[in-house]
Amino acid sequence: MSAGPPEVTTASPRLRLEDLAGLRPSARHPGRNRTKGEIAVYDLAPGRLAVKDYSARPWWIKNTLGRWLIRREASNYAAAGALAGLPRFAGRLGPHTLAVEWVAGRPLAAFSDGSVPAARFDALLAIVRALHDRGIAHADLNHRDVLLGDDGSVHVVDLASAWRLGRRPGPLRRRVFERLRAADLFAVARLRARFAGEELAAVLATADPAALAWHRRMRRIKWSWDRLRGAERLPPIHDHWRR
Image (tube, rainbow, N blue to C red):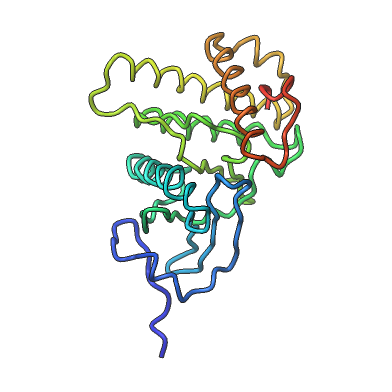
């Protein structure tokens, strides 16, 4: 008689990557480009689990960028703790792999402009502010990191780029955190303007000038990085900062 799938809890350190070896994932989601980990979905007790894994990437990616991002994201999820609107963290399963609760929902990227109720962005803002209260800035909040459930729920995923204030931050770390915190708030307003159909001009008029300048600069840098790493879809540079 089969013992059944391994049980997953946040506090259990017993789940290992080897425990999943004999199980067939119910779905696979390849990374958008070669610098992204693959996502495999497993049906386990008591629920579904999303496993992000860099093991299949070339060795120079998985042992540098992949290892660093997995360590960073696992640490950020652990620091955030049980926060409503974040998937439950199930642990780091290896140097290139981590697991979180699978969130049923569609990313904002799957919705057309102006089609999302504004109330969803009130919920998103609450999640982002709760992260800030715990000393965590998402630092890269975009339309792929926000999932909307059919039940009206809102979730934020992917903390690989998040920045933590830390227990004893110095002046420089505090300054960076405040800049990224402002960038998060601007990102929420920008997503709201696009997907809830509000006027972008109004968002820009009320935005923190420093946050707006930072956002434009970072998006142009990201545009260059995306082009270098071979992103499949690359908008024109003249409007990339607005997305």
